[in-house]
Image 1 (cartoon, rainbow, N blue to C red):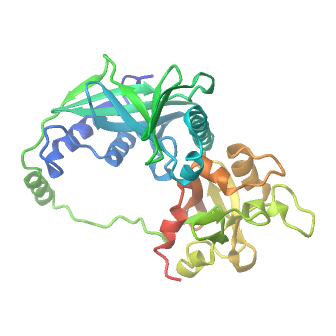
Image 2: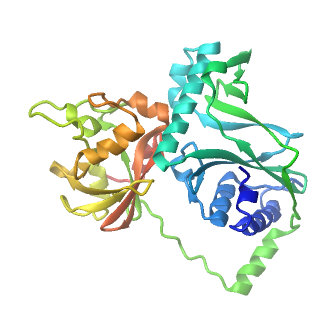
Length: 382
């Protein structure tokens, strides 16, 4: 697949124009003759030009979804046609990974990487995937696509192991794991058929921007995107059991409520915890208790949901097992009777969900990176 060639009439001209425009403003950030493009800007340009779904907020294995294609977008400086770039971080698993060496470490890293890719494919209904690379050199952008593949666990071969990193390959790609950063890198090669764009870097982009704003009479209207108004983040683990930086999923409540004692329960009886702080700080975000609304998943599955239980502590679906089927069975691949653990959440790289409010009758749910609720909680007062 070649994204530019396959979408020649569906946004390529706009994409190239936007890349050139942003690159021309490079002197806003440095005086280098090599164009500068922030990776988030590259992702946003891609999604705007091709009308792709932007997945970067969820920090999943893909940055964008174009139809059923998952796209990892990379922008980096070209080093003679070869560059080693970050593809995954494993900070939350660093203590476990430090106990492994050589081949066992390479195998574990590969398994974790593959699990995250498969989880993202399931979450967003992705059937194929690719890397889209925007490399930068003196006054030029070089654009190409690269295969985005699972690591072949049967062909892992360690090529170098020293005090700072582990290098291995699987017959198709070459990988490096940096011990101190708990980060996995992949080597990218620029192909001969890469597309080259000439870039003219403006000498004084500040003056150009001032002229544009004055001519167009533009104003700095604030975009609406505020926590508690447009979105909240909910933990998939128990706050009550999580102490001193250690997090746990309750074994008898939340997403494991089916395991609670007392009356007989169905294996699909689960809920996502809604901390009291959410209601105290943002009392108007969710509808009142037991008021049904639509909860839309990333694949546009429409679930009937409501806030339930004492103190409105639970986000549940009706039927209740709809949430379990989607989250625990389809995505996490847990069997009926298998407990969800925080270790499992760390392995796939998420421990929270972001719930976005469309209106009082419709909300969207997506996954958020590890520690997202912790960061969100800092904005709350009580």
